[in-house]
Amino acid sequence: MKISLFAPVGLVAAVLGFPALAGPDRVPPLTDALTRAECGTCHMAFQPGLLPARSWDRMMDTLSDHFGDDASLPPDKVAHIRAVLVAGAGRDRRAPDATPQRITEARWFTHEHDFAPAVWKKPGVVTKSNCAACHRGAEQGVYEDD
Image 1 (cartoon, helix red, strand yellow):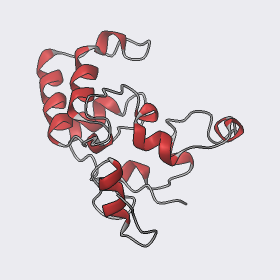
Image 2 (image 1 turned 90 degrees about the horizontal axis):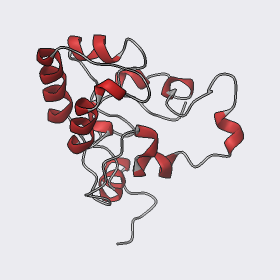
Image 3 (image 1 turned 135 degrees about the vertical axis):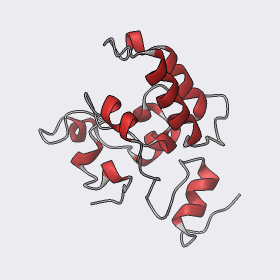
């Protein structure tokens, strides 16, 4: 399928399998207070649309080893957060069986962030998951190039 360079960003994103966008370079924000509080304690509380449901399910099943940390929660909180994440999850049309655990390993992310290694080592960036270093509205789901 050939895509015009002038096609709307949302259409291009959908065809390439990027997260469901609420508008150009936007993902529906995470509004659930419990999810924001629990997930935002250690890192930015990422929007559910950034990963497919199967990724969120797997992540919620492995909270005792959450990227090397124990992020275990009581079962009622796990069920609530899982429901929020799965309900708002994105789709990955290009890799329908992939289950990325890191947003930075999702196909859409690697496509959009193909930068030289030096970019990730800048003092204000440090890590690929520091979305707010380049996208000031990241916590609100706005990922326009700032």
